Length: 386
Ligand SMILES: Nc1nc2c(ncn2[C@@H]2O[C@H](COP(=O)(O)OP(=O)(O)OP(=O)(O)O)[C@@H](O)[C@H]2O)c(=O)[nH]1
Ligand SMILES: [Mg+2]
Image (cartoon, rainbow, N blue to C red):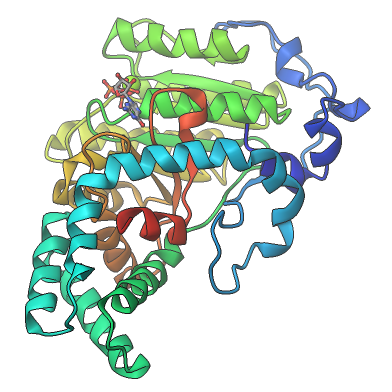
């Protein structure tokens, strides 16, 4: 459970002690039929308060210069610290291969050309890509000069600073509640982790008292629908699905049903596709257009789920899906595996050059519920170099 969701909503401490305030004691979703089909009678909205909850990143677990979220750290951190540490360990373990090779650059005694060359190689090996590697090297050399550093260990610290600063614009919380419902469309290549991410996110939202409706817009595979049904059932939320239906039509029905039922969040799961499959990308654009027809301001979020193991290909995916859909956020999954993590730096550099950054709302470090975590730039930079 993201303890900070509760905190943002102003019911953190009571709920942390297992005493949800009276008006939140019964999540609206729990009262809704578990697996309502599209044609189910439209339920009157429950009086679910929408206080613009934000799944904002928590304050950094480790010390760093003036973290912006510092004032919120205390109560939530106390309750959430062990959980957060354990996923951080997973992230570290996942990135260890790369991390150790970057960290090893700083085990010598000299700061010379050889160190920078080794670092360049290590960053490239970590999937940072040529542009981000050059950017970080230039930035690091400037920092080293300014700090008049003579110790490689100090240089390592400066690299953590450089990476943190580059990644910082990607650190932003997903907000729901400004619109009712908040409509979230989820896209990505096959097997990236879309459905799993939706399942975990749904659970967190439902636990926070949000009434969620899922749209099974992956109508290609019966198994895909079943998979989302399992998550919906497990989370006791409604789902709109249709056997072999048109993805855009299913999504349209879901957004309309979400509005009629007074849902807080509608999440559309789409079928995996490659950005090079032009007809499938066109279909995705159609899903987005149709969501806009069902609700003027929607979709409010267009999320791309990328597998952290795909290296520089992840950046290509981000660019291509952004061009087709206009992304509002990313989820980077499987950072517990063999992912090298450097691609986040490449995405951050690309994001800088875009008119507005595309935040990484969440990272996935495993298949369990607690393995969906908010992205925190400093923690990530430290894990990368630990
Ligand atoms: N280790 C690890 N596995 C993950 C993570 N996220 C998802 N998976 C696994 O990746 C596999 C694919 O996940 P799905 O959620 O089905 O991926 P998808 O993008 O919906 O796939 P398609 O709908 O087929 O395109 C499953 O076995 C998940 O359990 C993660 O963060 N870490
Ligand atoms: Mg799926």
